[in-house]
Amino acid sequence: MKIPNNRRSFLKKVVISGAASFSIMEIVKASTDKMQKSKRIKLIGNETILFQGDSITDAGRDRENMEVNSSSAMGNGYAFIASSELLYDFPGSDLKFYNKGISGNKVYQLAERWEKDCLELKPDILSILIGVNDYWHMAKHGYEGTIETYKTDLDNLLRQTKEELPESELIIGEPFALPGISAVDESWFPTFDQYRKAAQDLADEYEAHFIPYQSIFEEASKKAPAKYWTFDGVHPSLAGSQLMAAAWLEVVG
Image: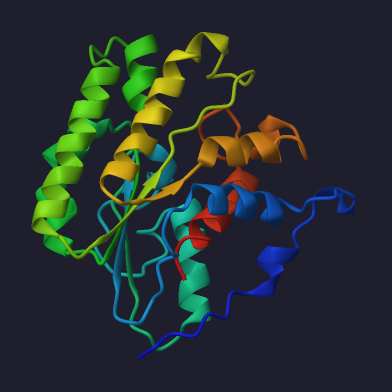
């Protein structure tokens, strides 16, 4: 069953304060278009779509709920919003959504649960957002990993995934952090930028779709303060979750 491309128009009409020359969706589209080296992922029906990552993806989901397309299992963040949008747009297409993000995870912790929480699900589309804790926990919480640890761990994880799921479409989200809000200060930079670059470089190497969340949040922060989009510089607000979902939906649909 071929799915028509009938993206809902309301996402394309969001304008902060009604006065800006660029709408938020135009910012999102401009950022994602610039980064994509391949066409968006076109759904044809029956896909299994898996969101993986840390607390930004987890977003308070019920980890005991293993049901597909369950609102409590999807959490209350961007994964829930994006999944709801696609299920609304494409009824009867047997799309199956899972969220297996776990708060606090770093790449090596994804790897420890990868067989059960990814490979056994055999996702047709695998979306990974990981990296902020690999830096944050090193800088503030005694984790002994480095940027080289992050690059090596993510490289190994992606290589394993492509070997075992060669037909799966990969999406890699850019780790992001907005300074000047409670959890993030200028000491994060420029070191944290190396984690962002590593994610992008590996996305290129593995021919994954890349979502430039950092620049999207930075541009959105010109429309409303950064604290409007993320309450601590890392975890998105309601508006920030919608922003992330809108960016994700520029890649899939």
